Length: 333
Image: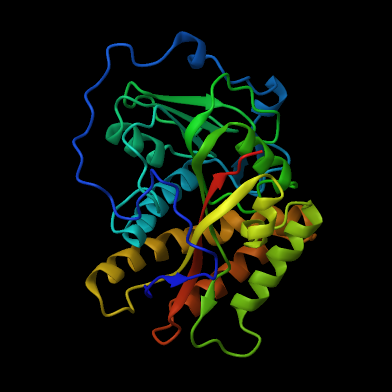
């Protein structure tokens, strides 16, 4: 894992934020943890959206979202969460979330690992974790985390604003990021922060001409374009967030190694977790995009995934994935 590459964005810190975590005591659990009103603040998804869709041996939660929601994907997401942690030295966010935070929102929570970890650190806060599928949500968790079925593309129906909003790995999920960021701005307290994290395409330090990795990346990008939900990192650009009333405070880009090729032990561990997640994710990312939108056969997609795996695992490939963190705060309107 390389050292973080600072972007050119201006590092403007809100008064209540620090880059380094403080050694403050964890607040005691309040007897009046959350209001009954906020427990039911989120609208349920239409029943039709809860149908299961099976394609090419994988299960999906809708006809549009390209990622599966089966057991294999649940396992991959849990591993991926562990690969993110070393990037921030075990911290859950690029900024210090103030201990005074009372309401935190995690959009696209998946398996809920991030939301559960935050709930344990902030027992006085109400953590709302939403997703378009309940397949990944754990049967139990801290009493202050609430898993809700909700589609972020719809109007958000929260009664109170949030002290912190978090999104991770949602590239390709939405056709209109401006609409998503507008809802973030609407439901974020003034001067409070929103953090979004996303991944770019697999890259090789030593990439042969016409590599299978480049073919794979080009194919899934074309499929996502045809689906109307582009993948990549364009939605993290400063101007995209600013159009919705969000001011970029800081960005960081990391190169997450895929494999144990780094010499540093911590980077080796992160690389091992990231490699497992990436290899398992090749089929998950590409299967629906290439069969439904590009006309490929399932066996051809899996054949390409196998060839990409071989390239990534070559000793001298030094494969990695760019990972970008963006921290923004709500502008005064």
